[in-house]
Length: 100
Image (cartoon, rainbow, N blue to C red; front, side, top):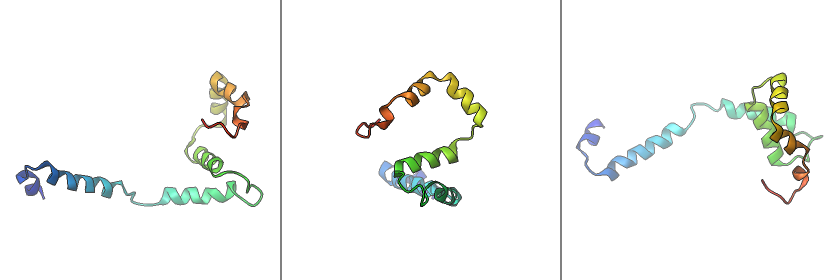
């Protein structure tokens, strides 16, 4: 394989294996993260909470899985961020026609 790259002067012949390598190494070695998300999903989307949209469930699961801040840290962060407080207090979140 190394001889192939050393002897080849045509850039197109070199680019195909490079593209193939990018796709092969992009595949994760396991699916533990996906299974973790699927195990969290029934606690959020149940018979009692069946009217939540897919976007809402996606946001809840993203926060639950990726957000690693303690409650006190989050409270102090939000207390200092005026932009977040203004967005929470605004009525824009209830306007279904408006997309951010």
